[in-house]
Length: 219
Image 1: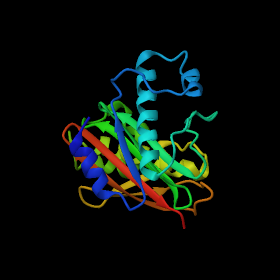
Image 2: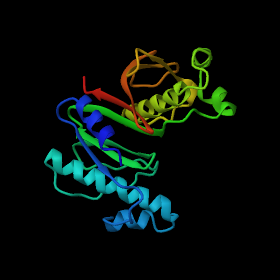
Image 3: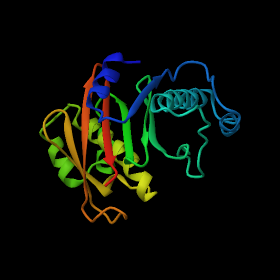
């Protein structure tokens, strides 16, 4: 796990949010019965990642002052958070993070972790809008494609807590404001958000890991 990445993310977090980490390569320990049942047929890698996410989430619950609790999956496979809590879990590039907050304060949270490698060229048309694809021409061989993907994934997670809608990659358009900030704009109707709503986010590059963070305060 990247201590530098975790420290950088914590420095960006607004007050009232809890971030915790766990090792997705460690043994799949710490699952509560209902969580273990959901993973009974999972392959070992998926089981280890799932267990790491639940361990990290329970650590973050403790930081928020909540007692340990099971975090089963909803029918759409999203985490079913304890009452009064919202959050997000992400695992990638050898790291697993959970970010939690009180749902009275936060409408949605999103983190995504990706390896610091460009996306394959053959999937860029699927991932990128025409405007984003044009921007890639200014970054030949660079990491902009993966940063776009990472920013979209974090935004999808954050908005899903409210919309319960699975957006396509073409439903969001990302623009970057410098090396560490981005704006994600909705290109489709997605209630309860206003048409063409914009979400602000942070983009980080630490060592071999890219990360994106989106926090949606309750209005």
